[in-house]
Length: 234
Ligand code: IPE
Ligand code: MG
Image (cartoon, rainbow, N blue to C red; front, side, top):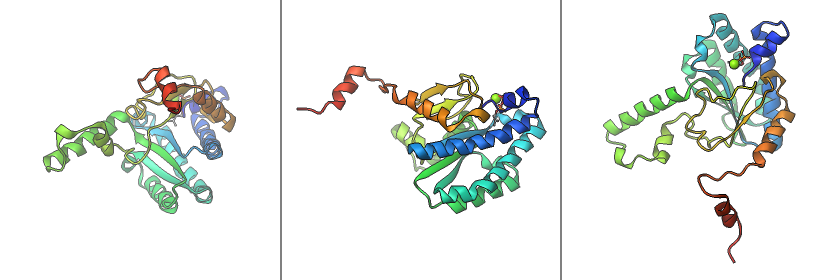
């Protein structure tokens, strides 16, 4: 969700105003996913590196997050959307953690749609935490390194109970992953758009999904193999 700062600057507004407008775009995106039958939406709302921003911007962003959740909880419940968090929510201010817990509790039973917020999230940190947890299991005799596979290791990631993303959209013209779901993105389709996040509407989401649908996902195979596999054997 990139481009809030530039959106604000272009209008002579403080950066936090861009973030505020960005939270409206979240509602659009979530609604768009529901319309399209997309069951998992993951938003990179605050990275493990975003702590390096000026302190007032960090507290402004996290304050907005708490306000957003408080305001939207009823809507999430109405639309049967479960809230999840990946990253290190334990690093967030206590009042923000409380609001996250409240919203998660109220939406815990829903299975149709999942909104995941990546908060204080970074892929490298996620991998290090996974390795630590895995190593502890090895030391306790509950895991055997000789049988470690991707299927085993992925159970130690924050995303253990989520599918890998099919499509990753980055707004604002940047062409980077910036430490977002790097292992989970192994076969994700990447979509880059110049649209700044506060301007990102449902229609922009539909365009991205349309572009995704036209792509051929080969997973290391040839195009011919895929076409043969989809032709019923006679
Ligand atoms: C939002 O956009 C990103 C976060 C929520 C941390 P930015 O704040 O990075 O906006 P730009 O890149 O300055 O335009
Ligand atoms: Mg940015």
